[in-house]
Every structure is written in C-alpha cells, then in structure tokens.
Image (cartoon, rainbow, N blue to C red):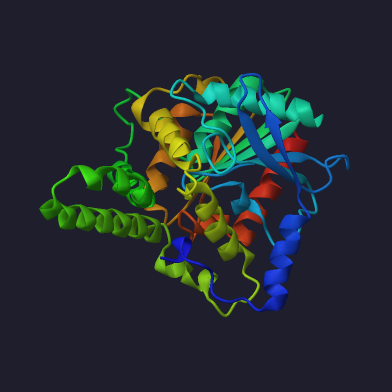
Length: 338
C-alpha cells in the first residue's frame, strides 16, 4: 500500500530538496493552559502581511501532509498537527470541536495573527467549521472543507449513512497491531495464538485496502515512481507514518478516537448554520466516501454555502497541487470580498 510504504528511491536531488523544504519551515509547539501541547509549522513569512490560511489535516495524517514542493506565493500557511496526532498531545475523552476552536484561537493569538481563513480536509472539515463558528466572521474570513466529513449523528432524515465507519474500526486495529498484540497474546492459550496472528494480519490488510480505496484508478498517474520530485506522494506517505506510528506509542490513536467520536458518536457542539464566514464545500467527483456527506453539509448544515464537485478527483486526489492551488485561489478571492 503506497501510503504505508517507504516512497520509491527519488535520487539525491529530490530527496535533498524534500529535507531542505522541511528544514526551512518555521516550527513550534504551543503549551496550552491545561498543559497540553499543540505542534505546528508555518510555511511562508507570517510578518509579510500576506493573507493567512490555517490548514487542517484529516484522520490517519499529520501536518506534514501539507508540505509542497515550494512555499506558497500568495499567502502564509499555519499548519498544526491536530490534537492526538504526531507530536500534539492527547486531547482527552471530553474534548470537543469547540475546544479545538479555542485552541486555534490561542495559537493565532500566540503568533500575532488576526484575520485568517481555514481549509480542512476529510476529518479536518468539521474542526474547520467549528473554528469559523466559534471565532466569527471578524476573525475567520473563509472556511473551506475539502472532501470533509459531516455530522453523522444529525437527526435529519437526510443524514447520509456513514460509508466507512466499519473500515475505520479495522484501521484502529490494523495500524496499532504492534501495540495491542503483545498485550493479548500472553493471556490466550497457545493454540489460539495462530488465530490471533491471523486477525492481526487481517486488520492490517483491511487498513491497507481502506487507504488504497481512497485512491481512484484515474488518479494513479499522480503516484508514478518516475516523477522524481513528487512531493505530493512523499508528503502523504510521511504524514501517515508520523500520525500513526505506534512506537513509542505516539498519540495517533487518541486523535483517531477523538475524530471518530466527534463526527460519528455525538452531535456537533456548534451550529453550523449560524456560521457568518464564507463557507465553501469542495469534493472530488470520484470521492465515494465523502461526496454524499459534502452534499449534506451544503444542503442541510450550511444552506448558504457554495459547492463545487471537482471532476476526476477522489478523496486524496483533491490534495494534488493543481486542485489545492485552485482552492487556495478561491479562498483568497472570497476573503478579499468579505
């Protein structure tokens, strides 16, 4: 599975360029009032006066996902690893989407940033909406959800059926197989160990199939090994490993559990229909898991929002540089008129 394997050899120039790009980012970690830490990086000069866009990654990912081949020219990116992922602290069981919005408010205050816009991908979509709802139009100019999830516990009869909940449960088991297997194997009979190993392999296999399904056949050229400087592919691979590395038991499981609960087990703790900022919903035409949730977000949760279905793109394909550049341009244009 491409997302869980080391990228193909890139050649010295591309590999060095990738490391140089990461080394050139302004990185930091904010200690919050309750002692938790929120890790982040800044891509671009935040003192330049250019518009600021907050980028929020999805599940099974981290802030590294947003590192592209060159710094942004038209804006500045502020990119946290969301709570429970990579080097950001476990948020705890009572952590809500609005709590996250307040964490972002403290981060932006810490950085001296006033107005900004937000883009959230996949499970980063609901937190993006929460930031706009909590901070208001004076602070958040535009919020854009790219293949974003929805409020699956909404009582509306139009609420879409969660298309990937079972697959996500398998992901929890598969990604952290190396963590839970040593705890259980010693407590079962020897004759059951083979069965347990089989279940572990099945969990890992289902994880790979789930992630692989996020890529559509039409998008495979974006992953060609011949593209020596394919930062898009490298960034997704590295961000996945950073977010779910179970040794030394990073907090990736906490992040996934929190996302699962916030979107699938309980109602949103904010009113999305009351958001005053400009709201954009984009989804790939080939994104079967999130196209219906995106339509529900547009038609029910935020009726005043704008919708765009991106042709020939799936759930991960919408992160490709060309599509992301179009979305950034749309966000900046909308922010300039609000």
